[in-house]
Image (cartoon, rainbow, N blue to C red; front, top):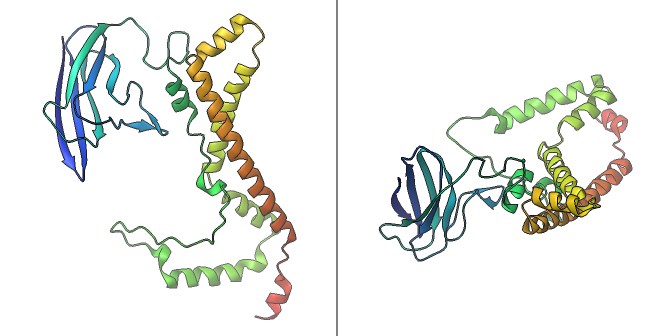
Length: 262
């Protein structure tokens, strides 16, 4: 037997719905839970994509025996009950996202696995002047933002300038590279590999297998859109890297002259 218990809260013009799907059966069931409110469902998301099973009308997915919480938001006015159990079907073995052959059942699962195609903010050229962001406060004192601490650190750095080698400085510069950019490049590579697998098919069986691996033709379209976005983001990043490399090569810091002026 499958049952659904639900409740809602309303805050700042948004209705938050929480529900519990209770599966008292001994085996898994595929359930459909519909939104009863007069508005679209704002589902939970991962990498900007709705979590598995969610749509603008509600939730549909595999539910194992036991109790399973779900929740979403909507701009609609609240009502009781906010959700309704509309369908229950028996299901066989196998996962919700990936079938027994390791193939993704939906294109959205492919996008969730590969990650967000948008490049990190630090990788996008910024035409405006850089502005210093105020520090976030969380009730914990931080010496990092104190003027006295920065002054002491600056004096200590200046006193160590003559003892540092070029290799030390280069190593420090490499260590300051943001971790988000390498992670995004790894995600780009995974998406491009999927696109290459689709583009490299030679026979009908190979094409059938490749299309099935990404969730069907809609999955193929999702991969194509994601790789197209990757291409634009990578082009932006390449341009910024070229510009920074040219500036780094062109700049000449007059270390000896400035040392004589001290």
